[in-house]
Length: 386
Image 1 (cartoon, rainbow, N blue to C red):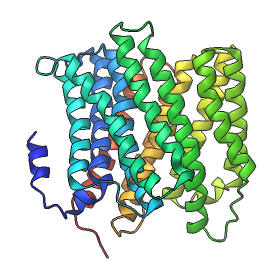
Image 2: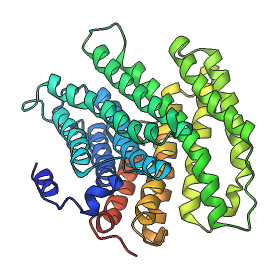
Image 3: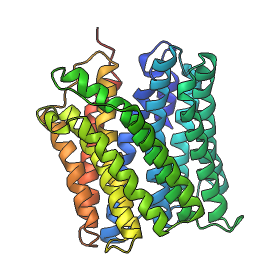
């Protein structure tokens, strides 16, 4: 609360309140580190702060709707402003969005202070407000190409609502199903946005590398990923869903090969994005094999998408956007290069599915995002550079 009062006293013209990624990326990085640290402590010592949600549901919900929610908000509010040439937030609307997100995270960990109904209401308010905030400039600018992001954010809001309705028994739906659907939605977003920005950044930074793009392949990957959502709704855990996962993985791999990822090895700010995309492909592949009778569980495969894909793309994009939009040189440096590697090491450990490796995997992932948080602090709270 002291943090919010400090922010509310900042001048309306402060870059901290004019550039949405600043507050949201700091919040996302810090919560990624603290949230997984709490989870690793629970796995190792059985300790977790009191929560109005059971430990497993708290972990899944807070990583997918809490951490990813802040990441999505910071990225889309910034990207939509670029796409439309219009500001997405005012200082007041930005503070409102940040406050709702922050209070929801706090409320779930303080059930003695915040009733569950208050925590759930705060959380369910976040994505609808975000959808309205990004919809206004998109519609005003007739930026119809990006209408799909409004639909995705609205779908995030619906999944969040269904999570709580299922958890409280209002509807006959296991809340874990909504977590699977949220991963499906995030996969669509990462494949679609990654398909735009990764080859663009690669071609701009490495002009001598011919980056191959194919419109039909782009539509096939994005359409196939959208079909996965439908199949997961209609036939969850089916062999058909498994076969479709493998098909989307194959199409996405073909697209990645066209981006020449092996040429990015000297550039950590590029290869972290390619690795994140590769983890998405690995997750889709392992999920498909699991649903077709393979040795790994589907939930283990999904962690390749969340821990590896989302983690790698998040850490790479948050640093890139923060540096680029504040006039700084886009560079990883040795510390952040190490953090990038830690995310993949943590993913590999998590995919072993061995209980003894889970706390270590969580610790390494938390460490990577702690390194990002301390890297972002002087950037986000400092003035832009010319």
